[in-house]
Length: 91
Length: 370
Image 1 (cartoon, rainbow over the protein chains, first blue to last red):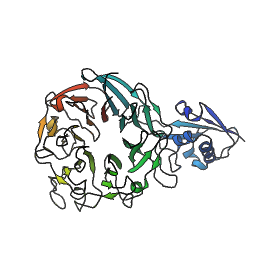
Image 2 (cartoon, one colour):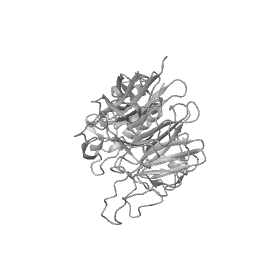
Image 3 (cartoon, each protein chain N blue to C red):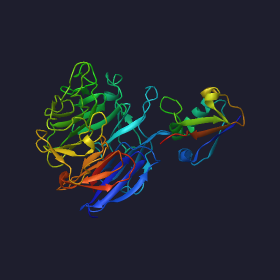
């Protein structure tokens, strides 16, 4: 089973320039754990030291925000697309 | 290569670098560098080939440390930024101070929540310093308006002074292994006990290499008119120590306000110091008339430096790291404002000119002659 993680341009230097990662995982939490192993710099951009997803980073599974599903425990099935998208914020 | 004056300017929207010949006639501006996020600390490291470090407070993707090895023509991120151990429970919010250590590649870094980190490889890897970061007081410190920040790191051989808002002044006598609170005479107007052991809202501490026992502090003053519990608490804001920070006394007499943020010492004269008094409620220039105040006798008396500065309707703030002084024979002061102006005070602040008047809000200014 493989899911695709879409990486925004601003973070691609943290994963060797890849715009997509193919990961054999069954949940968002497992996807992040795999990213932490394979691309620690990318992981640090998504999660803080406590393992929480950073406040201004949104994770979507297909078109659903993970907060509207089961958060980090959101299940993934083969072919799902996980998008990492910075929030609309700033000033 | 002739010597140049280099300014690193941390702003709400990245870091800028300005360069001028030693005459300081015209400054060329480069930047902004970074992803358009706040820069609260910079370091112009003059050990060996000059390097400019800048913190990058990225609300989206976390804290970074940026490094330039070409005097601010380009910046790139170091391999890592300080980070708390995974089981610590704290997460880095901001980087407030970057200072050079002993070795050529050693760096010290004060962060929010107040903790200390060190790097021995020029910022590519970092290790938390437990003696202060896990100090028995550390979980009792509270954030001030700017956050719970470790903003001052002053090193004098094995002695290390730290300034924490709100935590107070801590000192190590063993090179940073252990620290103790050292706040005798440092007031906390916001506390039922105005002179607690720790928890003061220290804004900045400064010293001078020729007078290591002497320290100057801009503390959170502005309590002279307090009419709440405990009554007036004057003389809390501008302080001096002559015993390595063991005890402190007020040197605020003669200033229009004892509230302010920066504290700067003349590079050749430890008796000459500079502050920027602000109105406590608004934290802007008193009466809308900015002035840098100078003492030439260690705080015994104060004079106002205003030539060239606006005479009215200027309501900016100069933040804790927003002022610095260069080390040329007749030094110039520099301060940046929250309204995005960068000022130079030539001849030790006697004559002021605005170098840049529309930068983003300025958090910090550092200067070096390289």
